[in-house]
Amino acid sequence: MKLALYLPNFRNHVTVKELEDLTDLAEELDFDSVWTLDRVIVPEASDRGELQYPFGMMEQFPPQMPVASNGKWFQGWPLLPWLAARTSKLRIGMSITDTPYRSPGVFAAECATIDHLSGGRLNVGIGAGWMPEEFDAASATHLFPRRHAHVRETIEICQGIWANETFEYHGEFADFAPSGFGHQPLQRPGPPIFFSGLKDPKRSARRVSKYGLAGWIGIQDTPRELAEWRAAIAQELEALGKSIDDLEMSSMIWFTITDTETDQTDNRKLTNILVGTEQQITDRLKAYQEAGLTMPLLWPPFADVPVSKTLDDLKRLKYDIMPKVEAS
Image (cartoon, rainbow, N blue to C red; front, side):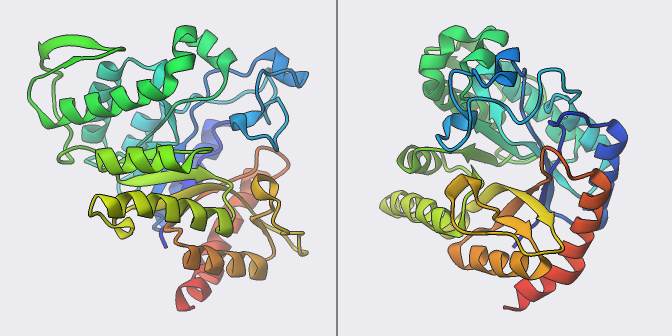
């Protein structure tokens, strides 16, 4: 099982120094990768619990964000070149990039540049987005009803630009004649693409299968839910003569080690999945390993857990917990 760190660039207050400390430790601990979060805005309506949809369109969450509209946080995409320069071993990525906020051709070309800056260590996580208010702020209001189709075209354009010296595309959201986009990525035929699916296993499976994607990323999936997603995707892959074993199965999961046991009763997205004592987290990671999770994205909580504690927790995970998981 690989370990990945989900940097807390999105919280009520975070500093560059805190992001530096977390990144440096992840590199020191030989984590596989470090990821940032894509967030363009927090509407004031969120503070009042008046968003059009609950967080991630997941019914168990309230119609508000876990961060206040006056929070002091950082955009995820500009952090990637900084991470490329700061690290030498960690793979880097944003989980996930909401494609409707970016022009597909520009996005593909920028990914190629960041892949060079990192020496070929870029992962590309993509998804459709879920918050109409954010689409408004990104001047993409008209794309909200067609956001899933936009993801599809973005994948096709990325793969086309990365694999060819010149490329043309004629679609719904992009229409351009044969053109060159500068350097192709160092990774051939391009950086691995991870697709984020939160609600529809069939759609995720079809995307992964059709485009030969490298990974799937969920959010707060219990071992039971992870096994269900894996089975759905495996079925689609097998129909195309492909194997689920070639796919990175990942999930963004809140992580904190506690002194006393927490209630980890299966409550779907609200479960304390990786919040608990050392023994609880050890047992949970063993269950994940059995369910087919290959890379947890360890997510420091949005509030109430200082970065200094997360630093200690990551060390305990690496040196005290993972040896027991790997020995099982």
